[in-house]
Image 1 (cartoon, rainbow, N blue to C red):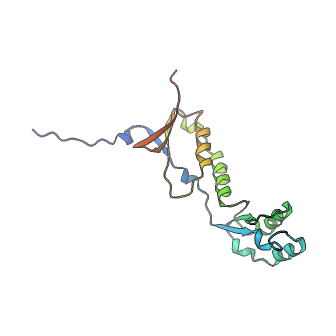
Image 2 (cartoon, rainbow, N blue to C red):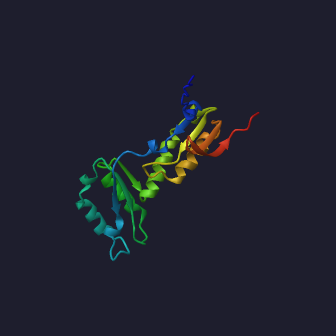
Image 3 (cartoon, rainbow, N blue to C red):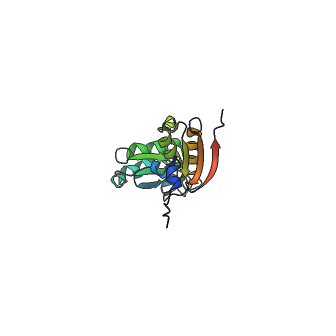
Length: 172
């Protein structure tokens, strides 16, 4: 008599919840406005020339995009310069952010994760997925751990079939 072995998906039956941080990745194409291009001798920003350049700049090219404004040169940029760029860009861009791409993604993830209700993971076993097709910053992993720890039974990192334990609530 031949017995048929049934394959059992132990991961599916484990009750683990997999959290994909890439789902919190901001929508929108990123564009850059580098103030270096407006510096005199790559050192100083002349207000009159800068205002004229901004007035003649094609702001429509940022329509529906996330505009990152920063200076890639080692120069002291007056704070009003960022304010001026924002004043011109805001009517066109989806969002305006002061900083480079890495800083933007960090801030965007933290903003998105702030909206997450950690209580929905009350007494759950959560796996924070480790691999992503998008650049998830380390700060997002820190924030999700901080956000889930008061609620989750356990927090793990990786894939459900191979996890690294991060936190486990002690049994009372």
